[in-house]
Length: 420
Image 1 (cartoon, rainbow, N blue to C red):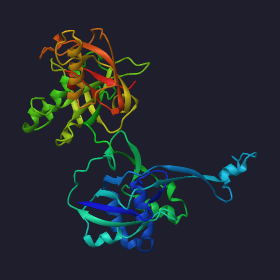
Image 2 (image 1 turned 90 degrees about the vertical axis):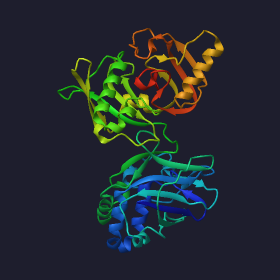
Image 3 (image 1 turned 45 degrees about the horizontal axis):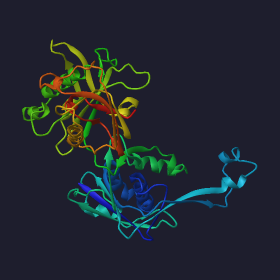
Image 4 (image 1 turned 180 degrees about the horizontal axis):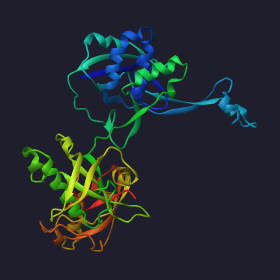
C-alpha cells in the first residue's frame, strides 16, 4: 500500500540546508512528536521504516537565501583548539538557509509500505516538523496508486534513482531502535547511522543493470575492448536462456521495444581499454527483467565459457564515466551512422539529427568528428560494416546522464560515449 504524508509550511518559509526535507528527517520528526506514546506508536513507525519513499512532490521554492547569524554561545570543546586568536568572533557565526515558498501547497511524501490499519494513521498525522521559525503541520492518508505527475516549471517530482541525483537520508529497518538507543544515552540524533538514496527530479530515460566480468577463479576478467559486439552477443544469448518463452522475442531485439547489451571498455588516462564491465539497458515503460539475469554465463560460438557477468549493486569510477551527468561526451566506440552519407552537408546534418532523436537525446550544441582507426569489429549480420562510422565529441546545452549511445549498433556497444 502507499501512505501519503503531506507537510504544510504555515509561514510559507522553509528553514534548513536543503529543500525538501529528507525522508529520514521526516521520520525523526514523527518519532519526536510521538515521544510521549512511543511504545504505542512503535508498531506503526516500524512499518514505515521498513517501507520505501518512492516519491516526493513539492512546488519549487522562489529562491535559496543564505546568511550568517550571530549566536551568543560558549564554544564547544572541539572548537577551542581551532579558534583563530585574531578573530574568535567568527566561530560564533552560524550559516542559515531559508527557502521562501510560493503558496500554501504541501510537500507530499509517498511511502510504499506493508498494509497498515487505517486507525494507525493518527500516529503519522497532525505532528509538527522543525523548531522555531520553520513551523510545519502534517496529515497522512492512504492512496491507491501513484498518479502520473511530471516535473515542470512550478512542480518538482523527486523519485529514487540508483546512481545520480541528490543524496537523501532515508529510514531503514532498525532506524527507530537506533534513535531510541542514542536518545537513551543522551547523544545527538545526528550520530545515528545513516542510509542514503539518490533522488532526482529528472525522469530516467532508461533502466540499467550493471555487471562486472569474472573468470572461473572469481577474479575480475578483462576481454579485448575492440570486440564489444561479441561480448554483447554473448550477453544477449545468456539472457535469452534465462527468461521464459514469453520474453525471448523481446530480449532478442525482435519486438517494438529494444534492449541494449552494452559492454563498457575501461577508460581513463592509465587504462588498457579492455572490457571488465557491461550494462543492460531496458525501456522504463515496460516491466523489468526477472531476477534470474543476476548472473550470466558468457559462452562463445565454440561453446566455451569465457566469463561470467555478475550483477553489481554499486557503481564505481569507470561506471561513473558512462553513467554520470555531463554536458560534454566523447565516444569510446565508433558511431555507426544510421544511413549512407552522400557527402552533402544537408544530408549529413539530417543523419546526425536522426541519430540523436532515435536515441531519445536532445540535439547537441556542438559536434566534432575524427576517423575511427578501423580497429573495432563491427556486426556484419545486418550490413553495419558498410555504413560510415566515426569518433565524436558532443556537447549538450544541459547535463545528460548516461548511458549515452547513438547510431546503428548502439544496443550492442557501438557509438557509446563517456564523460571524460
